[in-house]
Amino acid sequence: MASRPRTIALIVAAGAGSRMGGDIPKQFRQVRGQPMLRHSYAALTQHPEIDAVFVAIADGQEADALSALEGLPSPKLVSGGATRRLSVRHGLEAIAAGGGVDQVLIHDAARPFLHADVISRLTDALREAPGAVPALPVVDSLARGEAVLADTVDRENLWRIQTPQAFRFDAILAAHRGWSGDEPTDDARMLMTAGQEVRMVQGDEALAKFTFASDFAGHDMPISTRSGSGFDVHRLVPGEQLWLCGIRIPHHLGLSGHSDADVAMHALTDATLGAMALGDIGDHFPPSDPQWRGASSDRFLAHAMKLARDAGYELANCDVTIICEAPKIGPHKAAMRARLAEIMTVDVASISVKATTTEMLGFTGRGEGIAAQAVATLERRC
Ligand code: MG
Image (tube, rainbow, N blue to C red; front, side):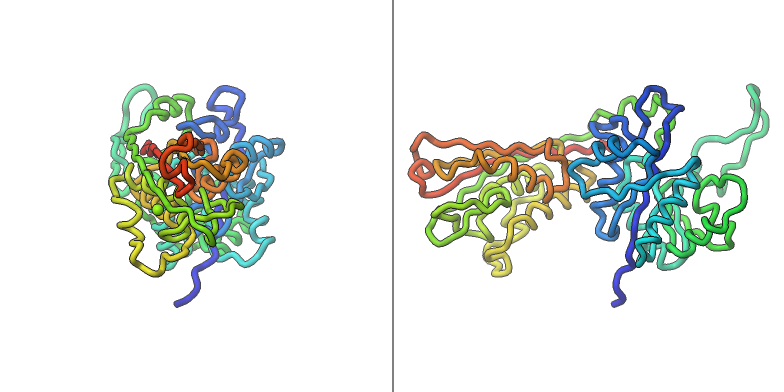
């Protein structure tokens, strides 16, 4: 099988946002609890076919961009230009300078709600054509007129074209370098002007562009919220490593059992699966299967999060409680939260890790084992 093409995404986030009102450029304004840019940046960095994400920003926006993307894989920032076309051109030249790229997805930050299946449809289409765009049919009646309705426009074969737009890299770079016309409406237009074919793939209503201040209204209400709980216990024994929330803790005892026996991560994995009513960790990774012996538990949690995302859900928050007399958990909490955030590819602010003892009572009090419980809440917002 041929190796997968190297694919880079470029997000154009260089606007001043003057139509939106307010002082903050719209790509940094909060929408559904996060800066707008963060939504599509996270979707692109999480997609298995995207190797790197560049972001074109206006001069002086570095701090805003870095703050908006804090905790996510480090962005490659590029200075934008005076127009959208020039911002894309600068981005493409920066990507070209790095070399070795086969395909590029060019996306507008103003379309924050980018789902993985749109990205996959675009990259699939690039096997057949040098360009591909998400398209949706026009459903409203269209008309010409000034104040008074004049001609109706036949909407058959009319499409709304969205971003990301996907291209074979050399083709779109050549189209940009050779461009001499008026400002184009989008990059697909430039590729077509260069005589090349652009395919349409199914777009997504959720990808709607934020253009007016009123577009922000109503976006903070989740349309579906689900919660799950998880509980787990493993035995403390000599001769094992102690892993909790993906962090190796120095201790004279370690946990025994399924995989690396990371009891806290197992509880959180079960909470995530539970929220989606997708069974428990043992259903997905049977303890009887030797391939999970000693395995790092991060893959279980990442898998549970992927299943949730596949169903359109994101983590709203989770709360993990580790129950043991020793070792002390406090010094490790920050590292635990950071590691869980990395595995789940979410904001560290969404993750809580706590610890308690049982006042020397019971098996945890006697140091025979460690227990953990977790609650996870997932939300679908589009
Ligand atoms: Mg377990």
